[in-house]
Image (cartoon, rainbow, N blue to C red):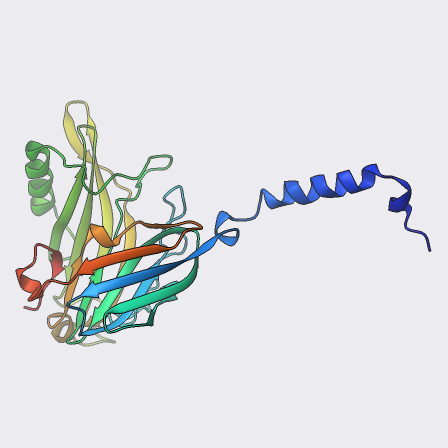
Length: 264
């Protein structure tokens, strides 16, 4: 049988055009990949280094938080291999932005984050974008006096400008909950991105939030954990070039300026 396409030279052009058009719909992450090397100073107690690709390029969550995830076993996209006394390596990470998750001995977790959009079509907010002091004071006070299901609601980090302020908020319920019958002593913890918007001469909280994680565990266990957040470990951008990241773990951790959960 004779291939009819061979009779028409333009057929090859058409085939090439079709392949080119199809490639436009291939996710960018499948087209490029590179290695990420992480050097951790004071990292002798590190047991695991991993990354989470939480958001797509528009700030939408790639997957919903896993409600069955454990505080000591988060759902991650890749786990590094230890290649030295304090070095960890990821091989061929697909292109994208990642948040680093570091687990240490003695119930300790250090994690990166980004101030992702809460409303559609909004941009990310840089972690070093410092809102005015008046805005910080109002938002912190508004969160403190508002009613919440959780008995501990703490704004950890704020970033923004005169129009928009985003907040990484830690929400804990370690009093008796509806889970008590099935799970005596159960406590819940979530981390979310909230947003306050300047409207009509005042700051108003957006009803919509972005949930980063949710864990359920016994309250006695929760109170033994250290779970700190650092924006320096968030938004690590990978393209086709290898990336080297150096990070110093404070010793002791409770003396650092990092915010989050401390044993209590």
